[in-house]
Image (cartoon, rainbow, N blue to C red; front, side, top):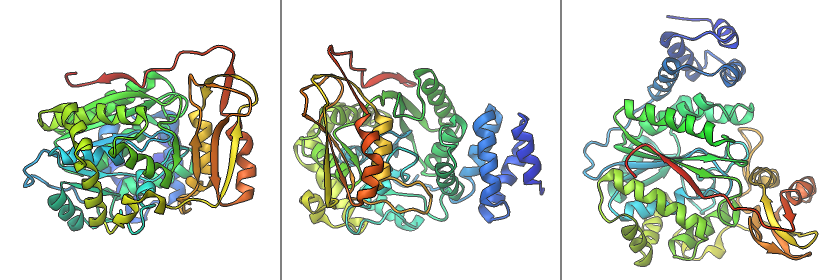
Length: 435
């Protein structure tokens, strides 16, 4: 049945519920070009303000899932388990986590996204490795997974195309922080991977799309409900995004930090969260050994070897991983310093993410390219004591005008006090499954 996009937009704008048939038509018509970007932008804004009820969410997710090919990996003997983050600043966890889990015997068909809003994207980071190709046809996606136990790709033209299109549109229309659209986006592409299990990292706080623990719990519950209804064992962790993860925010610099984790030299917070989420992946896969097994994969080098092996399978240059000095670095540098003595009581992830994006690490338009060499290196985080003139951050950039536009924003991300304040727990709580 053919519907009117204008009428559906009006209905959702006015708070009415759409039927499964209406939603199915809308998503299909958007994918085939009948509904243009500007009308889907209006619908995304209507959903942002009025939400989707559970039946609408189920229909929206199913329509996006079935807009393209759904992979079937039932012939792959190992359990298929993936991890997904709702998006954070400095959140490079997938890059060390996926090869660690694969080195422990889990098959990881990871389909990731690009930078969204102020948050970075796994695909943008991976593509800072020279030659690394993240756009794969389904048969190539399958071949790499079967041969290597891990694939790190984005949506192809035939896998969840509705999500690929909407993902970029939401980024450019300020409709990212919508629980139903986040849920449908995540689960449509995750369910298309033919998974047995899924671990979710639901961010909360200043640098997250979900600013409160309550809204993060709501999103986690919605994600778990959709996963379980499709036969995928799903568990979520609510984790803090009051400050960036690790010390690096950008693309190539986050690859360096990820490789440091795989060498056993990474920042404590990135390593701890990687191990926590990895334990859950192994648990869902029925792989024994947990954290000890993951730490062993770092210690014996098998996790780093797996990253190199898979990067080469994607067309990437192994020497860039073996010698991270070969990764791109922007030519210009500036230091943000502490204006006085004190303890860091704010290290604003949102402001830092926006500043890095403004330097070129992110995109304001869906067709824009990122600059892999720009970024921010944090020198002081929550709880640290600094003296006047100490570095708070180092910014690397390629365009002087962009730096001048972001200088004030980056400097304002830190707040100092005469006394320290409590540092929030990295992992707030686990939702679903048995701890």
